[in-house]
Length: 319
Image (tube, rainbow, N blue to C red; front, side, top):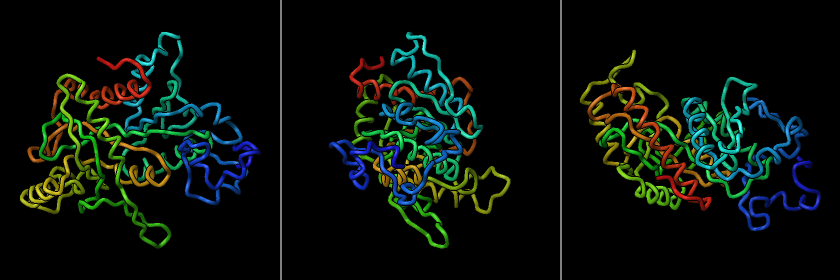
């Protein structure tokens, strides 16, 4: 780790997140300081094999999503909107040496896939946060963009999460560490959520709202679906549960937001979750929209975030 910070800055190591008035990404692991090399295995990157500050030091926005294809599409969109396409810059998968995640960089924007569910995004986040730390990135905004099931709202609605909650509608992420249950807060940056909501109002015919997002450990029974290989409850029980979720402020359901919110909060990352809904769970359990409609819905979070990033960079907004 000594090679990561300039010699004159070694004394700043313990307070690195406030160095020179900038908000650096920080880690909550004292063991990293004693490691001669940190291998980011699932990214096929490392502190000895790659110059991470040179590669990633200018990153200001990190956008993550479950699907590799969707995150490549977002990277291509940002390449076009930021003008890198005109420069003839080729888009390359930085993680091509591994089959776990994909990663694309377009100027100050990093696009990464995280797979499906808490375990997959958790692994990615550990290595992403360390990458940003080793690269000495500062003032970073990270946004999860994806799809979800709506709770009492129309399909195609874009939910900007204010707080991620668990299946008991509590703002917490519980994880078993060794033989202890550790509970962490899942509140997201309220100011960032409001800015994104305001940005959404500038896009014509763009249905968006702020609400709680419920994170579950399963797509079927864990989300009250009646169409899985197993089902241990009645339709009435399902509807009662979803009604209680709605009453608690839940407007959509997905499978990554609690660990995302908890880890970003602990490591000094300004974070947001923006997901489009593909169905209203009060009405259906299965997604049966035409392909072209699904494609258009899935592009909505990308449009909002690309618009937001351009505004933050002082560029013309997307029409």
